[in-house]
Every structure is written in C-alpha cells, then in structure tokens.
Length: 116
Length: 114
Image (tube, each protein chain N blue to C red):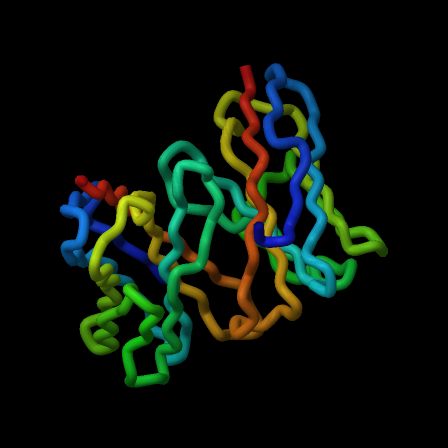
C-alpha cells in the first residue's frame, strides 16, 4: 500500500528567507502524481503545486518549487522569499493514476511558521 | 473562492444523531469527492461520485452514506454519530475523474459531536 510521510511536524522560517519542507512516499507504481497543498487558518485546501511522476523536470509555481527524486521517492517543497501569508499547514499528497482504483493519500502535514 | 460551496459551515450535534452535509460543485464539474480531516491530520478520502454514480470508495464507515443528485449537488449522511466523528468534512469537485483533473476544495463543514 502507498504511504506518504512528512517527518517535520513544524518548521519556522524568517520572512524573505527560503525553507524546504520534506515529503517521502512509498509506492510500487511507476506512474502517479504528487501534490503539495496549503491549508491556512481558514482551513481552505489550496493546491500549491503538482508533479507528474513521468516528468523529469521539477515543477515550479512562482516562489514554490519542488525537488522530485523519483528513485529516492522524495518530493520536497521549496518556498523562496517566504512571506507572512505562507504561514499554514502544508500537506504532501500522492495520487495513483490507476483508473481502476482511487488512491489519494495525504501526509500528516507540516506546520510552517513565518517569522517577521 | 474555489467555487465549491458547502453547508452548513459548522454543525454541533449529540452522539447517536444523524446529520446531512451538503456540497455544490463548481459549475461544469461532474465529479464530487468527500474527505474527512480529523484534528491536525491529513485528509482521508471517503467517497467519490461522478455524474450521479458512485465511482470510488475509500475509508467510509457503514454509518456514512452519500449520493449525488441530478443537479450534481451531493450530500453526505452521517448517522449514529460518535465522538470520534468530530472532524472537518471537505467536499471537492473536478471536471472529470482522471488524476489530471485538478480538484477544487470547498471551505469544509466542521462537525462537532458532543
């Protein structure tokens, strides 16, 4: 069975600095998608970035980028030039591409604090 | 604003009771998903509907059921409620069922069982 592990319950970063959130996963599938979601205090789940496993190139969305290491099953999120509004819970998620089943597995989250 | 609406925002009820949570997907989205988020945990997938039909089931208890209506809104019914059912319940919608389709999440319904 697939698993998603976020080993950092909480991280802090100084405003304008860079922080990296870690995520590892386990799967025997070769094709899948990985996601990072942001959940601010409002509790709304917001998609930050996603990565297709068969794509070598790391996904980037403005200040957010990922370091996808398929062989190591690692999918970390880098936030550059951190802003106060980045403070939130961040969830890593795995989704299978197997159309016969639905697997959307979330990690337990990392709480990011941004210090002014 | 994702375009997905959920009602009510908050619900407080007693053990043994039954509640119904409602979700209206974004205009044009045919697929609806339900998730449960217990305190400070990740989301647990419950069930998915596509154009009125159940498409996939996750860790949904037998006490829970859902349906999607012809106008595509969906309801999640929780019965014989227990204290452990207290959680945030999210609905999400997408155009299709494939993984390539982004899911848009609603604001959630916070259920408190006392």
